[in-house]
Image 1 (cartoon, protein in one colour):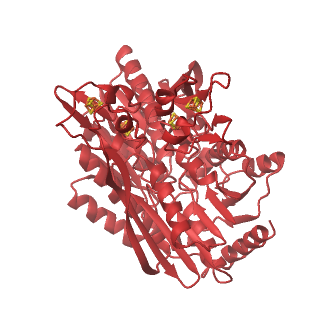
Image 2: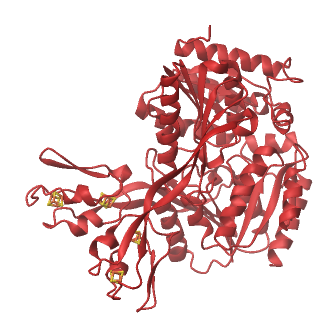
Image 3: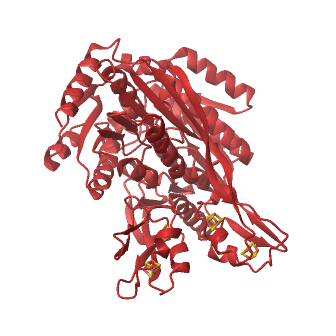
Length: 297
Length: 282
Ligand code: SF4
Ligand code: SF4
Ligand code: SF4
Ligand code: SF4
């Protein structure tokens, strides 16, 4: 089984629209995972029919039993996250600040604090338009540990791929360079970075590359909106050469991406399927297949 | 007054809005901009000023001292984040996973785990006339954004104590780092694109901000592409839209080169002026 993860550094580079296009091209031979759980938009293009749904708990939060509390103040002293609120006699945990470390519960002399699991989000397994299964999630508001939810989405997708003997797992990765993206990288065979020729796209690409270097993962790059700025497009091309990353192709600045999105479609579908952009997307997908040594046929 | 600029997803123009708004507003009064998007702080690419200060951001992690340790394993047992483990006759700490809660250190019966400082990123402070910018930057591979955000806010309180108008550029999304930047704001601006993706993420952001009991308004970026979904949603929900930044290839090009938009785009300047009037009337 091969696993391809699509990343972008910052958002708004067209990563999700492109991943959805790849998913259509891969059809039923892939399992799709939306690991961009902070902004899980891929389902809007994939027409999912939810088959399975479950709550996802991750981390804990402290709760004080007011009957048992003897107002000794120990919890307040040890908490490093200013999560214990008190007027001197009444003690209460503020859930938004509680990190779930459990220190207070361990030092409470009256055993008044319990740690209860906190709801991190919902996980879905759906059937999508391309004939594939898709695993996606919705992170609860202000929930922590989106890294764990990301790992869960990915593992679920891999389990499905193994069960159904699918050769490919296609992952819409998380943005940024923090915890969630690290979780979406583990176990990947190939990384596709979608960038744009802007000063921030350029800086984010370098930071992302630094992170990928730590994982020694082979990677390639798509320059979206390539005609926006020639100077940065050239800089990115040179950088890819120096870093021995594959240049997978470029896409023009094309408002049809948005027009297709409004219709809940990818750029590969009518009436956009014959456009230059659509042609390029198919070419890029060919190159990715060659790079990972997999093909649908 | 503290105003947080947030967005449900990345790439909707959050940095464009915060840098341009800060620069234009600073033509009238003193502004402090905190770039709290510590995984990808980009303000410094668009606002170039005189460097005032640079600090190492530190977090505290336990350091194992073998001599007195009885290998009782309590540290591993108490850590909720799998950041400390007993492996054979050694105790290993995984700094990136550590949330600095001090539990292992405080509970170790032999005092073998003093907390020591470790670098997790950097902070830059620079100034242009009436505008102070403080930017936090997390080291690559470091997983905890919240402590870095807290440090930047502490720095502002310490070094720019008389700041009366603070803009905070929040990380994208709705997870804990976002909460950290919204929870002490007086007002929140959510920026979005008028597309189905934008609408979907805006709804989550609105729920988040409501959950924290904050007042907010919406700014639409790339106004003119997409559909009416966002406008309709805002009017149904009673959310004001004090500015609409037009969809314009020239704005995208100016942005791509790392330049401020409003000095060369009258349309942008006009929308930002509306926004400033709106915010000043709050
Ligand atoms: S669990 Fe940790 S963060 Fe939460 S209240 Fe207790 S000590 Fe504070
Ligand atoms: S440590 Fe326990 S008994 Fe003491 S104030 Fe906290 S909850 Fe109450
Ligand atoms: S709690 Fe202290 S004494 Fe026990 S294993 Fe950990 S470091 Fe050693
Ligand atoms: S300080 Fe807290 S998070 Fe860090 S290793 Fe110790 S128990 Fe774990």
